[in-house]
Length: 330
Figure 1 (cartoon, helix red, strand yellow):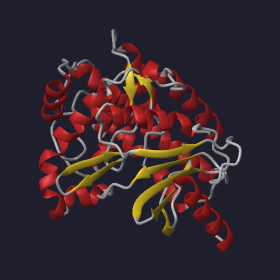
Figure 2 (cartoon, one colour):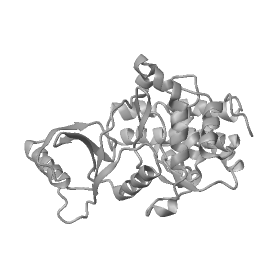
Figure 3 (cartoon, rainbow, N blue to C red):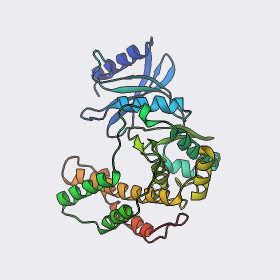
Figure 4 (cartoon, one colour):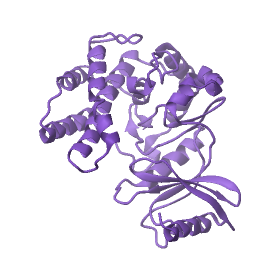
């Protein structure tokens, strides 16, 4: 980044925060849809998330979700300032959020293995369950713009398009779709769902969860989706323990029931875990497709594409009823 845009961003941040001085502005790693920056405004450490050019998702929805989560007592960074790219005179240049800085670690392998986080690991399942119970109390109708989709249909259409474009077929995915359709849960609750609740998207300190991050996939759905996604094998990062690599199913379900006062149907959690595994496998295909078609040449995208077979293997285990802990219908 040239000095001029860097200086312009720093001045924009000074204007938005009404600060006399903005210092130590530095770019952090970020996702495909936004940039993340750390800076200090009059000595106060803050975080900027700014929408990347070409992304069409409205960060205003995420800002509303964050405010609702903070009000409900979910451990989230406090949202201090936000703006739309359509705002006249927006000094940041695109949609943005400025949030409280929360210290901690997001790298899963460190959280799961480093001695520094030993105490945090002992309470992590309880912290995660309590966070989910709190966010699932939020009435989604109070948040304008939240999407709601049939994910089985959505990923069915996505897989058909990828298979056609890449000339591939994935029998394990087809079996999973058949099982999901035959075992759809009935009478599900309807709530705000985080959509990507897992290690990597929570800030963990020495004493447990400090903040739940990355709410850009929040939507209206069944709250059991978040529990199932947390148990997907990919998010265990090599650990044999099924819940985020740190706990057992009984621990998560017991802690969630205690925090929420609700009874959890294990078959429904399993259904969402299977769908989560299928979704991640198709997402790996999407990222590989970006590389193979030349849309975004990347060794990282190609490597992620090689993980499709891991999800196929996980689905075979799931559909054979051999995932320990949940059992349930076949």
